[in-house]
Image (cartoon, rainbow, N blue to C red):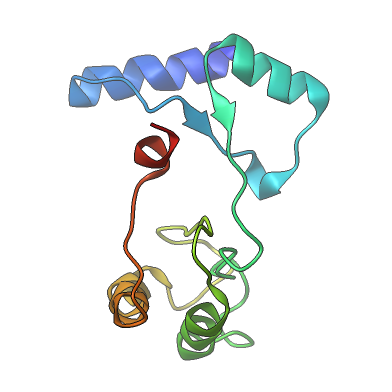
Length: 122
């Protein structure tokens, strides 16, 4: 795991000229004490999304259409929640990523303001 994290960090730096923010998310949110320790040994802090911030964008789009996921997020997200969203995923025929703008606009209308996890950690 350490080698994989370092490989990603190195490639990101090659492509962008800067390092990664020292944060990581375990796939599916599933961690073990060893995985958390390995990430920490590499300088990464594991971040879990909030239950309401689980936008459901990896669920099948025929059962969970974008409009329904958007409405659920707008109703359930609260101050301080951490959202997690994929750019696209195989289980969806209709990607949820285009819903990011309407989601942010709806949350702004509710008075939300936003920060990255790195900004929030400072």
